[in-house]
Amino acid sequence: MWPYSVAADAIDALVEAGFVIHGLDVRNPAADPEWTEIALSSYDGGDPETSRVEAHRKLRLAEELTKTLSPIILVTWSTEQRQAGR
Image (cartoon, rainbow, N blue to C red; front, side, top):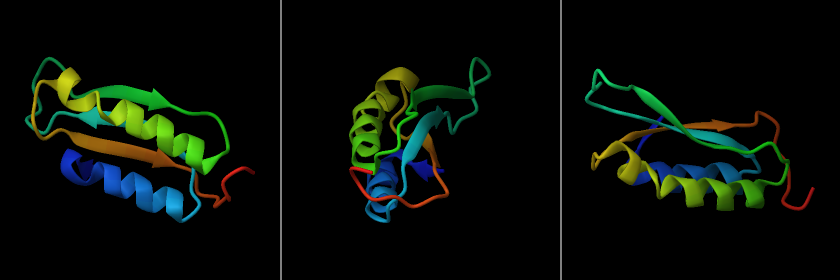
């Protein structure tokens, strides 16, 4: 999990290391009783670069959905490293 402010950098670092980003969830740091976690994205493919594009596209929705300036982002990635295009 990463604070929203560094989640994009974390996604980039994981992809640059060859990992595929499979999903993003957003968590409310204030533990609002109405919700605690929202799924932002799910990617079933195997290409790291495509997973990065999808993750960044969905990450932009986090603040809008949560109505908070500092949501926590849970990133799920593969444990197997791959190269882009494979």
